[in-house]
Length: 181
Ligand code: SF4
Image (tube, rainbow, N blue to C red; front, side):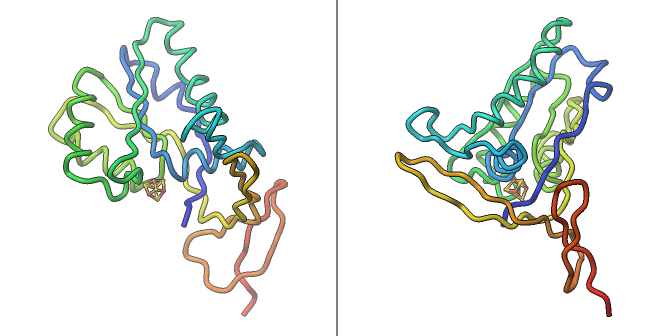
């Protein structure tokens, strides 16, 4: 059940830090960016499990920071689970060790991913900033192409808390709004 996420402009949130670690949840975050850019989710033989559109997005955050002398790092972990919402204790400890040398952690993921980072880092001085906004739950068709290439054809974003809903088109993206009683 992928959560649909939209990148936030975090430039002002990050302006006072000298070092930032970008921590990504490698599930819904790259799926969302790939869908927004109509780009492939996985091109296994070109990039392994990395999503080009998402890697470009991470780079677009790092570049301006590094230009003004901020040290940056990027972190994601795929095993035993890529989903930050259910990371194991071992994965949480790894983040704690990795984030120790940074003033801030920028989480590219949903509220639950940010909560994981907040919990892990609660006894440190490292600040946690969420870099993406949750819009709802995505519904998409996964399409496979030869060789081992996967794309997502997004149908709609279901807003949280909705009961049965009717379709409406908002700003080019189809949302599902509340159904009339
Ligand atoms: S932490 Fe959030 S973004 Fe990551 S897999 Fe879980 S629901 Fe998706």
